[in-house]
Amino acid sequence: MNKFLCCTLVLLDISVKWTIQDLSPPKYLHYDPGTSRELTCDQCPPGSYVKRHCTATSKTQCAPCPDQYYAEDWNSNDECQYCNTVCKELQYVKQECTSTQNRVCECIEGRYLDLEFCLKHTECSPGFGVAQPGTPESDTVCKRCPEGFFSNETSSKAACQKHTNCSALGLKVALKGNAVRDNVCQENTDTSAQKCGIDVTLCEEALFRFAVPNQLTPNWLNILADSLPGTKVNTENIERIKQRHSSQEQTFQLLKLWKQQNKEQDTVKKIIQDIDLCENSVLKHIGHPNLTFEHLNTLMASLPGKKVGKEDIERTMKLCQPTEQILKLLNLWRIKNGDQDTIKGLMYGLKHLKTYHFPKTTIQSLKKVIKFLHRFTMYRLYQKLFLEMIGNQVKSVKVRCV
Image (cartoon, rainbow, N blue to C red; front, top):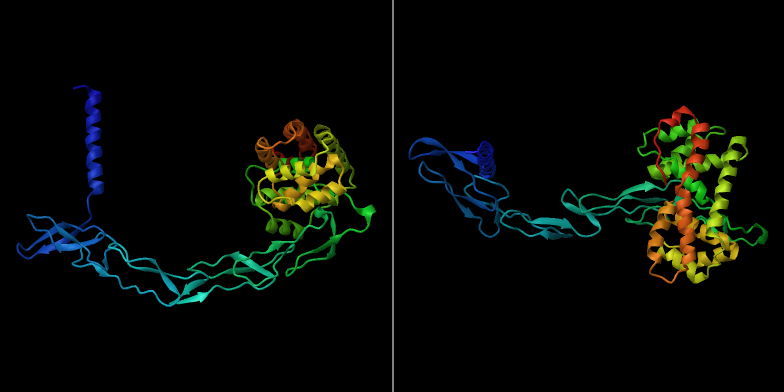
């Protein structure tokens, strides 16, 4: 016989024996009074019991559990267990009794089991939000709203909400919010002070996001904050950033704050000049689209997540120049969606705009902006900011592009 075929048959035989052994029922020891011998018998599978123990000449005989009785596991019992669970007040039958499972009861919606009672989920007071919603087995976990967030209701479901960013909506703060109330915004009656107000440009966002490492070390934010020149971001603000933002967003927020604190430093001024050049290039790519309200509304509707409303679009058209309107609306979209990546959102939107009657020239211009921000421009800015200014502490950290 061919050696290869022989080896194959041997391996096949071993595999079959292993499978049979693996599927064989568990055993139990039984004393046979007829022969005074101790025998190894097969257990009965779930949903059945031992009707007759094995003998020297016969195997174990199993019988199915009768109605209202069950056996969860392989067993050697002479009878099945009775379905004894009875649902109490404020409970319902989640799983009826079967041959393999006892009846399962669960507290009704809005309550959880504590000992033998279904208690009402705790409602978080104003100033506190739901950190962990209650379940039928556990109570609600409440947590005080951090700075910049609020909760003005008593609820067992509502989390803390972020304060409305009045300036991003072209408004001013009439009453500053706290843990129990939102910011109160009002129209800015000083027309000379009304500006388009883009808080973070696309180039700034691309640059700051470029610096986020692929794998963040636990102390990455503190290392970066200590390495940056000029006025340091204090520990309190660093901890606030950690609490309010995801790990991938924390570097972005830290650099925004650092840049604001160091606008007058000579080296930072040079970086700002480079960013301004980048923004001028972005404006050239976008050109002068003079889009209508319907066009801008269609563009915003194509983006994922929370939508920029019609009132925001109307206010943007009133306060911003035509070349700034798209940039402002993209900025509002990022803020409304928890500081999401604008370029990724725009890439998603452009794929869906093909189904609408949207100006092709504008689509092409936006695609050019995306390509521009992906090219070496951001890497050159990154070199100036991170390799020349920060030094060896950050050189070893691998970075990702937007």
